[in-house]
Length: 445
Image 1 (cartoon, rainbow, N blue to C red):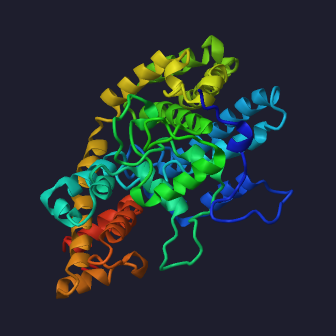
Image 2 (image 1 turned 180 degrees about the horizontal axis):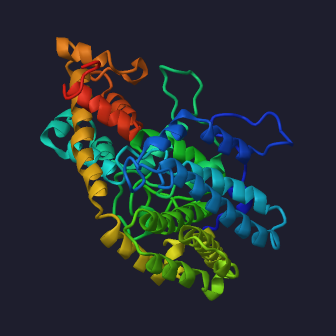
């Protein structure tokens, strides 16, 4: 018998760890989610984290914060388009409401990512897989160790959004977002260890630390998201497919535009791809003002907007065509792999790999991450583990008190706290902290 998720339960605006005692007619619960994220310190720090090009000398190049804002914008459009169509047969579904859920989930989608771009996760994992790192993990269970051996920014993001540091507050629930937003955020609803992993996009990575499993169980139960029959994992919330698609659309298209602005991609190549995507029949997009624009950068910006509009329409169309399979859990692949312009997106991605991601500064920041992040982890964890030494006491004074937990009594909590502290650093703060600790740079020297 098929299990079919119910939109009424999936969109229920229940707030994690809090009862909704009052209704605010001026601001929806999902708007409040968006506001809680955008005013948070964790979100603000994304301004100092690399997207592709490190420490850009111009504000025209994207960082994690500008990328997240753009993904949120596309997510809002996707949710609204889909919601408006679904409203025709399900009057209780409101397009604006679905758009707000997707917008909030997309806004937070990178909030757990460490410094130094995509290599930051690999650098953290590499440390814990080293002899020094394995020594730190030896008292953990096998499942707990995997949270660090294959570190995931997605799981750290869920942890940030839902976990309250007991040294800072007695109020549980982290940001206390609504269940729909948290579920739409969770693209990989499984822990780090599962039995019999399947070739499905929702199982490609993990998105929930061991310490947060009960939290997601609560969310899934409330929204009616079922376990998969294999156990140890859940089906995706339908809107998580739109969160994923918004990210895919933005990073492919915006990396192409940044590559052009940074001189790695010619105008002719960039324009060719953007025009081709905009002309897709299912994209329902018209190019009608290109000949009136003089400046080439303005032309690319105009074509980028048209391409994203086309991709949003294509993506929404595929979602609506597969709505039934999505609700029953039969559909489990990235929506962008099924749109009309998928082959063009693949070609752009390959172009980016060859001409953008091989750019020397991009490689340099990745290489630096493999020095800085393991160095910080080893320094702080060693000090926490052997806290009686004079050197350790001095190093621990550099740590905010809320990140210091007893390594001997609760090693998992201690390691998670330090890892979260370092993952939350901006690129520059991580580099400066590393240089100070290593004696490479000292104050007033």
